Length: 197
Image 1 (cartoon, rainbow, N blue to C red):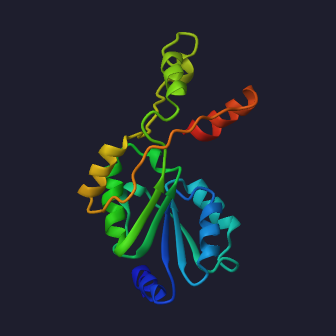
Image 2 (image 1 turned 180 degrees about the horizontal axis):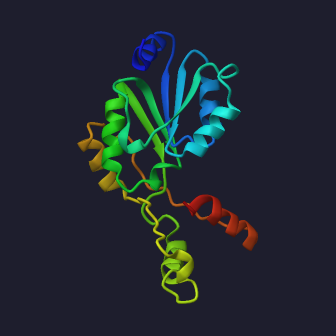
């Protein structure tokens, strides 16, 4: 039996979930624990993240959980999932139209997409400072060949892309969030873990 056939058989027993940009697998494992009769698949483009997730969430213990290395712009699924979920990952991809088309193909009829990501204006002050820093002669050598390939979009254009992909937008909104850090070390940690490729 192929992977798609296995998922369709599983669909008779519970919900099928795809987690795009699963990272270390912690959230994906929590989703799997919440749907014990379902099947949850986590994908990430990073082989290191998939290796970490696979090593830390063993199939013998987490029987309804699988991980696979895959680029979200080239999803290989067809009507296999009831829910596609993504948290804090899609803003790392500049081309959302191909991602949304793949999500639409991946969803079973009546399926849903729940995604949270950075939107237009996200970390704007940090990016403004960085734009100055990478041009500064004292620092530019550290940024040779470096580029930020993030996609931060406003709700109106995203709603249009969802519709063009064949998805019906229900709630698309930009939620402002102020971030504060107690000291320079915490702020540097946020930049290192959130923004460095």
